Amino acid sequence: MKIHDISMTLRPGMAVWPGDLPFERTIHTAITNGSDSNTSSLSLSSHCGTHVDAPLHFLPGGAGIDQLDMHKIAGPARVLDCTGRSVVDTSDLKGKLPAGVIPLLKTDSSSLPENAPFRDDYVCLTEGAARVVAESGVPAIGVDYLSVGGLQNGTEVHRILLKAGVLAIEGLRLADVSPGDFTLVCLPLKVAGGDGAPARAVLIEGSADKAGNFGG
Ligand SMILES: [Zn+2]
Image (cartoon, rainbow, N blue to C red):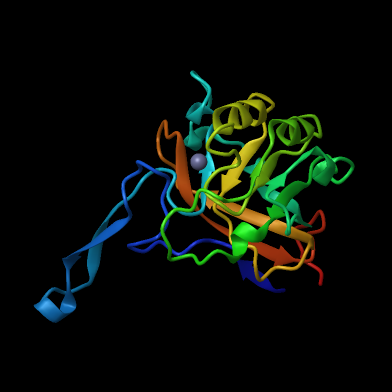
């Protein structure tokens, strides 16, 4: 069984959404300073690095991150090659989204350096593409920059997806993963009433059978 870690590494200087708090880690206790252990405190946005958007992020009264159906973000997934495009449009997704399978869109954004300031030329979905996703019966969609939508259409793209019950996993790193089928396990922190939360996400090669055993 092979596991691909497709999460961003949280560190100072990493790209964050414009206006969001920068990521910071402050040493709280240090063995080198005579403490028994090393501990630190973290300061970060709920949408820092690899993260999951809860419906509450854009839908008033929507479910919080602690109320997600975990089946939606842990299960069969397909990495789709969407490189070489400035946006992902309807024609990139039509007929390529089997119901129940989480599409992970690998774009040129996965090749942007991870430890770099925010770039506004990241690859996002058009509203039409979001509608194709919303009508396809997929439980979630994964993208490889900090938002499924662009700076102009982001609100509408999120609303189309979240209203249809499609969760958004954002900030994945897919450059080292070939297109194909995997099992995704994505685990956002369980924050009470949270609008979103950072997550560790991995792809497992081979799909699990009904007993939970992995082949391949
Ligand atoms: Zn988000």
